[in-house]
Image 1: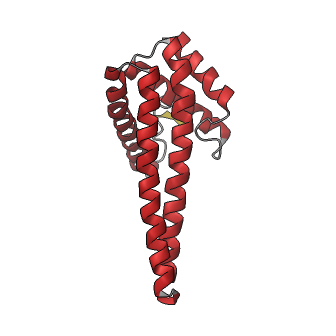
Image 2: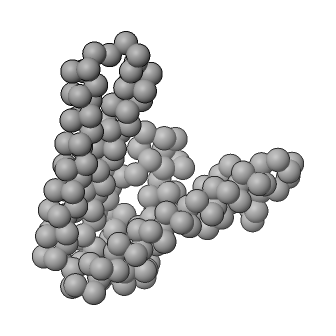
Length: 168
């Protein structure tokens, strides 16, 4: 298990696309290691699968994140400026949003095709479940931190919170 996690971390670091690089590097590294361990354990990835999976997944995640960031930016701009926008500008913003959703669908389809080349079908379908479980776990830990933040001295084991080990 440790070998798989380290192999995944090496692959992730080799790609230069680790999660949390824009955040504090220490917390980002811990979150990346946690995610690698979570996915590797729950998908039961072999070393060979992990070496092929992580570059594919990191590329997909980066592209999806860019689409979502651009989409949110367009929505925020339109919401803040709709009273000053012409009908054609509003239509262009709506078209841009629609295209963003279409691009995301294409990205998911392409990613799924790539996954089928590196993982067995059972693990492909399991990935989508694991992604959801991972997000739910992070939200639970975030809520626990928020509840503990109002209480001085509540930090969990060794000054760490949750299972990610990310400091408050």
